[in-house]
Length: 301
Image 1 (cartoon, rainbow, N blue to C red):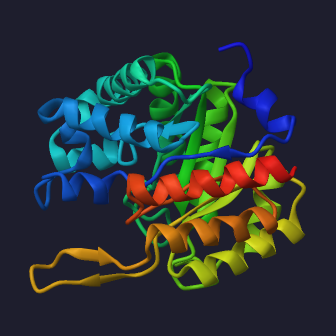
Image 2 (cartoon, one colour):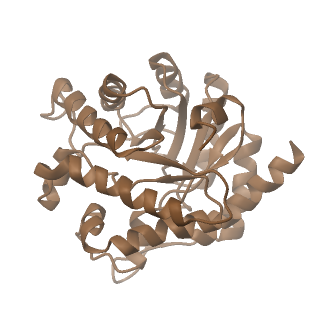
């Protein structure tokens, strides 16, 4: 690829990220209680196919299936001793999907780094040094595998987010996005506001800051607007397709339609987002509507 992700970002190009990983796997047969990373070995063709579906829908950026890719979090699946291989296999499958994609121009692969699943001291037992080491090891594996950027996502605690950034930056100079989930509406679970995290991430030296997951589209738009007022960094916007409702079988249903998601994406761009996609509940059909909103914005620009 002739142009790097960072060059496209600095140039101000509007880009399309992908949609949900876990919820799409569930609709395609992922058993309850199984870690999505286990599909890297059990159902690799399904992993590649979802990447391809998002690329076909218009994604410029696909995230690796490594949200729970620290050794700490992989312990649930019995993969803690194979963390580096898990992360590199995820990159390999994403690269396979990219190599077979047609008609979508440039595509960048983002290494997904989610929360550790533990709380840092004094709220939990995880030390900052251990957190930095865990995230650094994951970032190194993703970088060695060949990702184009890293996305530290669905963060709710500044301590963990900064530890993840520190660990990643110590092992690679790849572009880094830091994105927060506002699960309490306009606050993270730890009470952080969008303006606060935007200022902190800017001071860290990240390439982008953003919003992902969270609750309603309306609340996440407010969070995005607050970020825009608090930082000069490019903004990443990848919210859920609204709030889920649970069926009697304990299955999450997201009622936001692709058309509604596309209309929302137009508002995200107006609010200053440079990269847009979707999180939980965002299907390839939702993503296609988002990509169409981006195409219209590019024509106007």
